[in-house]
Image (cartoon, rainbow, N blue to C red):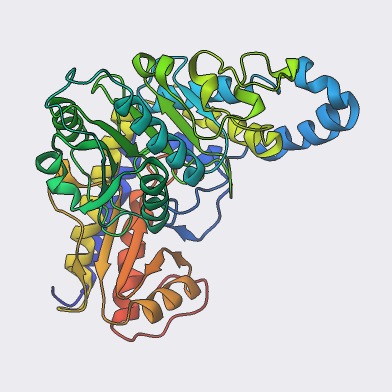
Length: 422
């Protein structure tokens, strides 16, 4: 990498302006509450959609404050998990009736894993590849820690052995004893995109199910759950879907598996007759089986309003801009950052890249703290990774160029004012 110079800076800044002018998604930026901060942390918490505050105020003041208990029916609170689930489903490529919104990602991972094992172990012997007992759960060895913790608990509960496997090797690792494999669609540290179609097909060929964690892909790229025959999937809504801090997660159960989906958390909300208050549990039909207890209405309806920004948006256009943004950022880093100071650990190949760039940097913690002080917000993952998330609905090319320029100034030790741009 070479030292930045005025001509290189001017050239890339001009290119950024042209790219922003030609951006078909540029008008979406106005749908968010933003300021002069260069916000590249939407892969941890998405920016606030401008329509959410007024909608949430109405929910609190009118639906809760005036209608009170009547809002469960009159305001549609009771059906919100499925209604909002279908809206999430459109973004991840799922037909209606397969996604339910509620609970946290961790809780939904538990439901999906145990439910998946029960589906496989409940099949007639000899129906699938091999006659071995299906007593193994595979897990992406570099998974987000919670997924690993939940997978270990699910294995104990179902009498399975847990086997960590590198995600790129998962397709080859699935075998005759595998019940379920749990894989992240995009690695949270490196931004590496894993092979959802190929791994899912390999799992099916071996007689296993595959559970996909979509936290770092939903809203950033096309997922195609139905198109690729995915069995089960989970994801959060506070990253690229901009649902707000702690907004409810979602669970996808493909239509073909719903009749045999036996949730390990059979709450009253998933009962076939929830207000019958029967002592014995009878599961409801369809995606409702993924519900547990009373929905968290305030955060759920904030999410519903946040999803309005997706109206008329093509995930193909989002993906195209995501790749263009991350390509451009890498070019700017190459042009501006002092030689040898950072190394990208995100795959260069488009087919293996999500919507973030992770740079290895020896003093990453201090560097990120200074970037944030200067108005460029990314995040730091120990021990040495700077993460920059690119949210195509509101991140622009000028933001991207400026972020690389500030990064270069920080790494070069140049002074900079708080909140300013070097």
